[in-house]
Length: 336
Image (cartoon, rainbow, N blue to C red):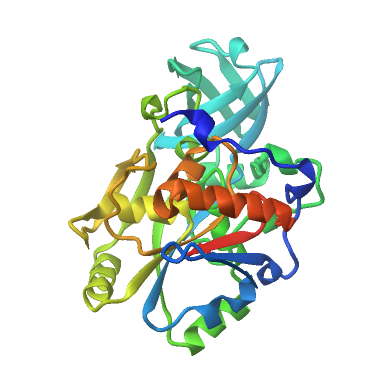
């Protein structure tokens, strides 16, 4: 399957640089996989569209201030992409050529780092030394890693975070969840729709571009996730009783599908490099809520697997025609 099959042309004017205010004013495209029908709603309509037979699952990972600026003495930009051990991180670095093994980096009087390894893909393994709590230093010293297409906008770092974010560890937001407000959660609760939470720390695996012509040759970077026994049991019971599992975002999808076998979840913590593209046999997810994704991305391949490549192509053409807003701060699709 060729990467060119997942390409499309998007006018720059449709790339959202700021979220709607309030967030639930986003447009919601409802894609019916069975009838192939596409309808247009607002996100605040979601509780009206769903019924008690639906269960929502969210990724509660929190975006950390993963972008750091240091000196060697030349200026260096570092993006923390994956925690490997205490104060040991896989990082993307600019300019990487200046960071040889053994290079020391100084960030401020309380934080320094040393390059211990250079990976084949050019990423670096950096061991950080901190005089104070590393997490607190990063929170004070670091910058939220906003996507490059919204740099220079008036968007605030706090807007690039779901209101239910809890577990520190992501370097990109699980953006489908950005549309949820207290009002939407309240309306879901009033309707008796249950909500559950899993965790996947979004890293390079989610946003790394596909650089091969045949998508089957693409290798996903692994990302850490967890689903506890209580949640797995509750979701299994819901599934057994005939309820539909609605995954909020592709990262939630990756957790559920990584933990499922023969239609049943197993409580798991670990790494997943699951790569979902057309031809994949779905195990657990029945419905999906997700934003509009970049051309040639693994996320576009995932939704094409779920709804069918032809229907997704139709949906994206319709979205462009109707001037939907795309990417992280953009509008959202509900695939049922």
